[in-house]
Length: 502
Image (cartoon, rainbow, N blue to C red; front, side):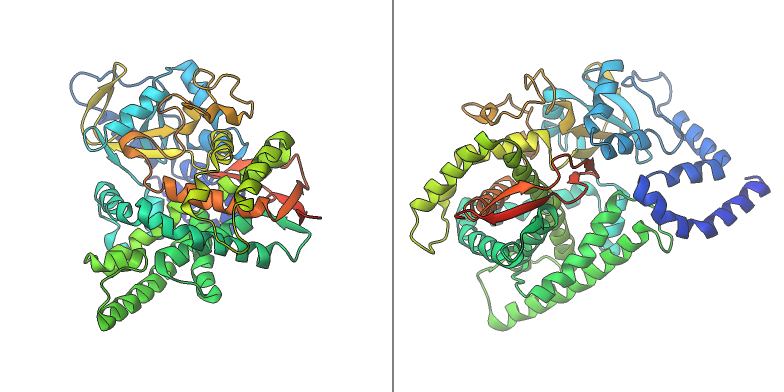
């Protein structure tokens, strides 16, 4: 590198920490541009070197598209579209220009093929461990996983993660969770909603979902102990979509520190539970941690799995709840029909009797509404894969090592699968519902999220208690939505509430 470039780089690095927060608040990957122009020669060399390794001999027939700028790729375009509340535009612009089946891009510094449509979703879901394997960005592993296990493959981690979920999420186990969910929802509404005339739905729903996960995953019920996990977890998850540069004062640096604190506290809790299990000779698991301890997992492995469960169930479910509240406020006729369904469930219960499995099964229309909300405001964008071999799709070659990305936005607002896609219409999910692999907030086929039913119970139990306790109006009907990466109301969805019976 030219000496002048080095001196500029060093000077810039000294100023980077103070400027970082401002950049993070504008767009998570803007700093990549700074680094790009500070050391353009180096990045250009790396870019050319990587391009020359796309394949020896005959040039493969790669998917159409472009890699964008060196290193940054098209990440900035993707982030900007998400920040503006239109993440689907990143997809539709490219499917129109290049191919409706698969297109090439570069995100997070990686060559990437974006698979489109129901057929693309099906291919990736069905091709797990044959063509592709799970892949997690380094930012997630560095911020939230134990450093000693960061080098473990995503395939290994994903396989272990799924292995311990099915017993925990079997119908007989889930049925026992419903009364706990119901009681905790009532306590949450009484403590955090009832004393106030105005509340913010998004932060409160996150608080409820996190407390519930602490109770069911780890048997943690003390408010101060829950808060000891909640605060660093919020810092860590915020850093997942920030600039992944670990310099003092940056959002990512704070995320890494918070992740280490989470691991320390989890390790202490898991060790304590392990000792209690040995001392008492427990043979029946009371929560997910107990189950994994009894299966011989190490404390570090359990800590990583618990973090994975929190990530999967936290922002996604609270986002779904938030937008259900929003859409019910916007569509009075839908609200009235959902309210009647929930009041009918309530009328069949004795005073103080908690919800049961059979009550949840009666909430069919409410779940149709929830699904239509998740179609229009999906709690997650999609998921990454990594090609483990060269393979061909739609006539194009996907080289080994490339990353693959499936996104809900290739189908959820596609009129091919959902006529008049911007219209809110819960009846789409009545009867046989949408075409297979077109509605994918939980994945699909063999890669269906094993926590789907758990999420359904969380959502329906909370909405039942909310609807039978309060009525509400939105304080800002025109509140802007930003996807970072889940849809988030910029003001937290403030609403004015009053008791239903008033």
